Length: 155
Image (cartoon, rainbow, N blue to C red; front, side, top):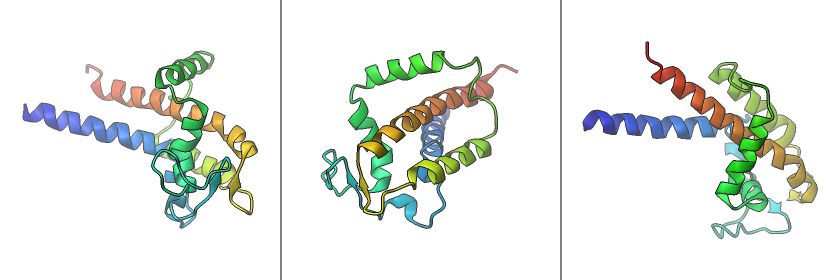
């Protein structure tokens, strides 16, 4: 029973870490606590309706873009699976964890931090980054599966 609990806890950490690795603000390097301290306006709102706190860039990328685009988890998963099926066999499984982190870092620099001066994130910012969020989540799922398959493969 103790072994099962340890393995379950390790699995939870692995899932969390792989997900975080693909969230670009977790791989950013702007000395800004992942933009948690920078308040923004997101699609005309200064208050995040999901937690009733002011929007910050980190929360926009953690949940805002995703929730705005597709609140139904099953529909969202089906859509991501459809996109994944259109990709080449074995896509996104190459590289190391460091490579994946550097990919997220480049997205932080090239997408996340490309902000209007007034920090009002409107439709243009949202539409430009929906595919990025989708692709990062899909990649995280594929890469998590690869890590688990590698770790649990019979030797």
